[in-house]
Amino acid sequence: MTRGSPTVSPRAVVVTRPTEYEALLARHGTRQQARFFLEQRGRALPEVADRHARREAALQTLSSALPMRWRRTRVDRAELDRFVFGPEDVVVVVGQDGLVANVAKYLTGQPVLGVNPDRELHDGVLVRHDAGTATKLLAATVEGHARIESRTMVQASLDDGQRLLALNEIFVGQRTHQSALYRLRWQGHEERQSSSGVIVSTGTGATGWARSIARQTPPGFELPAPTQTRLAFFVREPFPSRATGTGLQHGLVADGESLEISSEMNDLGTVFGDGIESDRLEFGWGMRLTVGIARNRLNLVVG
View 1 (cartoon, one colour):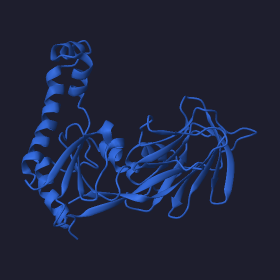
View 2 (cartoon, helix red, strand yellow):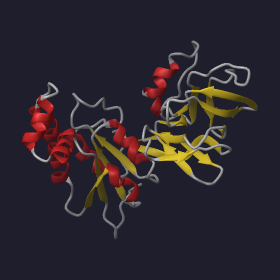
View 3 (cartoon, rainbow, N blue to C red):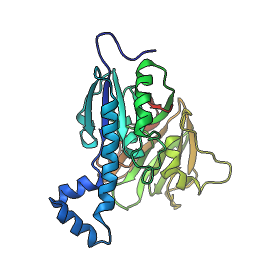
View 4 (cartoon, rainbow, N blue to C red):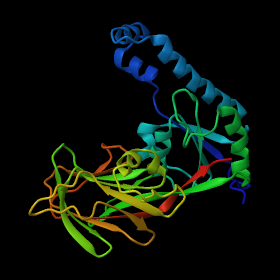
């Protein structure tokens, strides 16, 4: 099915975040001061500047290849929570894999094309394409010919109506290094726990944080695939005591199921997604959280 319409031309929304070079200039003011800062730490400015130049070259390739009739705009990661995406948008993420996760929770089905400007720096799990390939895929996406991979997302919902979406994982715990105290309910079982927090991961997140945690599980426990409609949860370092147990340490949450957590923490209880602690839900004493598969999905252009 074609995404475009006779009256509304497609819009390419290019999402970026500041490179290390841009961040250094913003912090230190001049190139000379940035150079001095890096040299004091055993690094060289040309290395950082070259990586910035590769990102800029990828952006230029994309810009010059877009059809003249297309609308276009560029959005910084810090502006995502204020930007309004339209149904005709094709989202082009230029940068690291984590930037795709950052943008996914603000979308409602728009296709996302990940562009890797520096294969020596970024793994390319979600940003799979170089700029040259991406320009061809943009037209195919609008025409409905591109191959789209629909990836599962996770949703955390508080009993007061607040919710949080994530592509990789949801973390529930304390904002400090204190133990988190809560009640966990899953598949008819309930347990009061004290731990370093609970991670609920999608299949996409199974290549990151959850992968290292899963190594501590018994043989035979398999993380979900990115397109599977199920989640994996892990309790980090549960502490056994007279008042807390360790019976519910990990499991798989199927479509239609949910993990329920009731907070017994003070005002430092928190819920955040994809490692973005600044975009969090407060999870104080007595609040109830439900974590399950989100209706929203990431539509990732893969070829």
